[in-house]
Length: 220
Image 1 (tube, rainbow, N blue to C red):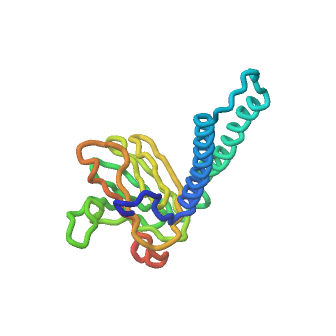
Image 2: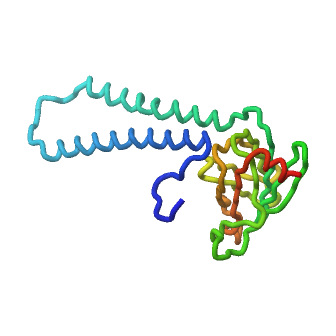
Image 3: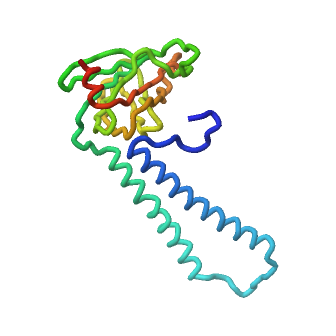
């Protein structure tokens, strides 16, 4: 993402693709409603025709009650579909546990080979992304169904990567989970999205998507 970007980031997961499509779908409805209202306001302001004998019109009243209900259905049905799909876990191959701390993240891989490490924000060099680069990147294979488990050791945190459509709160004493499938290799970045104290701005997240065979070698 760029500082001057007004649109959503490029989608690299099926969830984010669906969220982008839903955004466009909703915006098209909103723009249509706004255009119609502006046209009606313009007509009311500049129209000089007056009907003194018309006190009511039940047909119009019926339609302006039915139409908003139909529009809400067009918005609600795809919204609920995405919400349910985001909560669905489809045979995850790898489980990754992310723990939030003040003010760093720790990751735990414990399916077959165990691996644990902490991820701190890295002091920025010339070629690094400022306030985003970390010393230990979280790694995951692309085109592989992942299960992410979130918790916290102290206060509320929120693990967020916008381009993957993942945002889940890390709550002390509670486990939250989410599914994720990355479509392409690359580096995906995010930050803690819950105000968690003094250094809240210095809790970056960096996920490196790699091939499955390289991931297995990295685990060893």
